[in-house]
Amino acid sequence: MRRKCAARAGAERAVCAGPHEIGNHSQTHPNFALSRPTYILEEFLRAQNTIAETTGRTPAVMRPPFGVRWFGFREMQERLGLTCIMWSVIGFDWKLAEPRVTKQVVKRAHDGAIVVLHDGRGTLKDPEVRPTIEAVRRIVPALLEKGYHFETVSQLVCRT
Image 1 (cartoon, rainbow, N blue to C red):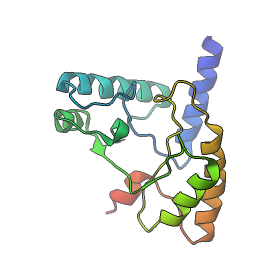
Image 2: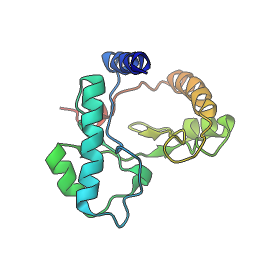
Image 3: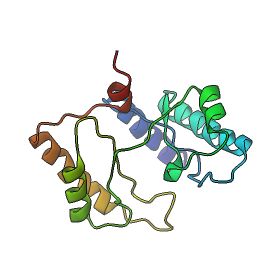
Image 4: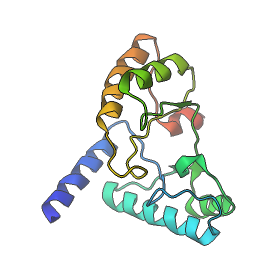
């Protein structure tokens, strides 16, 4: 078991070594509606610590599961130094077939767009992730062909 975890940590560190950014999306992906502020803080703090321990980086951005923000989010964000980032294009890849995901994202892309793809892990019992992976394989070249380029969320929203 340790060997597998070490390999996983290595892969996550490799992602961080590239031009990627990892944000905090909570530890267990709950819907925070009607949640206590202490629960919200605990969820994001646990995820913050897990991400930092695994990748060697502490996230600066977060997105609430399901896009649900509740009382206590502002305090949690201030305490953990997190900026909330939502999305402008959603692929619905956890429930649509790859061709529809690809078509929807490519059609709705625009300058400054933040695309959210979410393969269903954490929300569905046995998610099928292949449609998401295949959609990304098609979306990236299609958007590059249209003249778009990719930036991290922090690069996009924190220009100086």
